[in-house]
Image 1: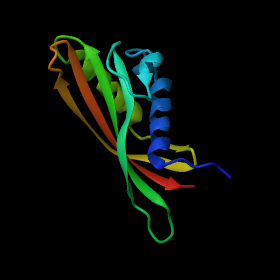
Image 2: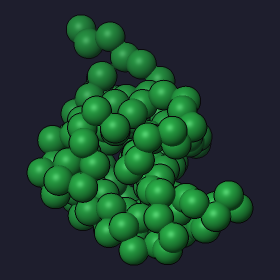
Image 3: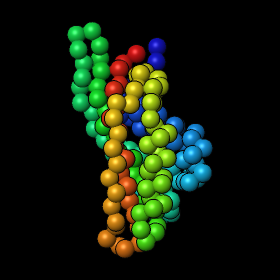
Length: 137
């Protein structure tokens, strides 16, 4: 029997694993800068995985959730070009995600991205939001 975690935790781990394994992503952001923890953008470029929430989507015969997760991309640049390039690589790496992790089958349903200029005038910030369907195995 597989020990199950909370579905968003399983999704968080799966997302990080996909990003670290993607040569397109790690050519832009070192794997050591793809984090699954609280952190300020003290080193850049930086990807932080983790914010999110879950919504019960169970039906009569399945235990399931919709999992919403935000992936933060931080760069230090005067514009948004590098930040948008990295966010695009993240989106392509996650497109079609369909994996099993920590007792769940996880499938990506949607993703979008928002871009921000940080008020400090030095950092650019992107938030890639993904929606996954998590079904208990």
